[in-house]
Amino acid sequence: MDDVERPPLGVRLLGALRRQPDWSTMTTEELAAFRDAENRKRSSRLLRVVTGFPDGGAEIRWSEVALPDRVLPIRVYRPTQRSGDLPLVLHVHGGGFVGTAAQSDWVNSHLAARLPAVVVSVEHRLMAPDTPLRAGVDDGWDVLRHLVRHAADWRVDPTRIAVFGESTGGLIVALAALRARDAGLPVRAQVLVNPVTDLTEEAFDHASMKRHAHSPTLTAEQMRLFHRLAVPPGTDPRALSPLHADDASGVAPALVVVPTLDPVADQGRRYAERLRESGTSARLTEHRGAPHGFLSMPGVVPQAKVARAEIAGFLRDRVVPVAGDVVTKEHDDRR
Image (cartoon, rainbow, N blue to C red; front, side, top):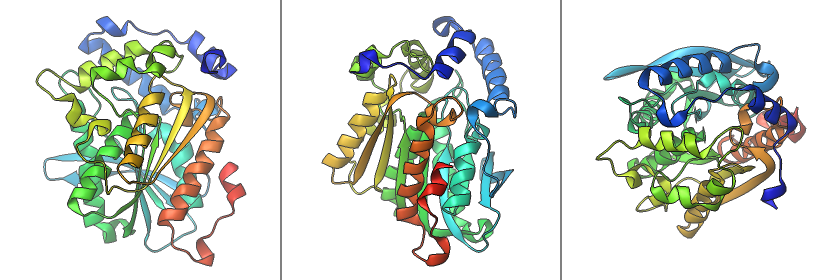
């Protein structure tokens, strides 16, 4: 039963040591200061005992994508032992109003080295009172289109594309998969890890939101702030909610990864069900005892390695060409 589950000890200790701000009264200045401090920690080498150490088989570098009206930073992961055009995995990190691509070095470097593939993580605009969620949604989609249009420059195969997102990033890539379907862009797979899929008030009535309202890595109070920033007055929350998309058919096959100790767990479960009802292949995996954001905490959440292996296997089956020189043994995914 969920009500007797406990987060891993390391997560509980980190939660006890971490001072949480008052999310309900946070000012714009306080949010900016919190975000800057939090992102410095998430990208710190010292925190890799929690966030995980990168795979030595991948080169990691910052780059930029020049769009018509803005320039966006991206973090690029490329296998060191491969050349030529490789599959592309577009990744979007979680956090919503905090977060950085560097927090996902552990999983993204592993995918790049072991699939192999080029993984591009979007440093999208974070939510703030003057920056609604729509900005980050557009960043994810616009970078994907740019990479496909300029595939030769990035040395990626534009016919072998997957999208992969965590939390808010899961929402961004789920919407990108829907837009790709409408645009005829051939996305072969989508991976959604503890995704946010519902920005309506109905989300606060889900059983998981009530049961895990005070979880150590995400609280219902944080989600209230998230909703206020994501959906400013005059915005239709359903338009930014994959769960409420008018048509969920014809999108890329999905892997939906749900930690059970997560306020938004039911959003992932319901979206997987919605995809299936629409005729889309959707695999749902649940990780008992894991909290929201667990894939970025392999040092304290052992379930992260299992989830990473699931993700690698799912992507390999769908975007990696079938050839002897690209087959990677399954045990490598669990190292």
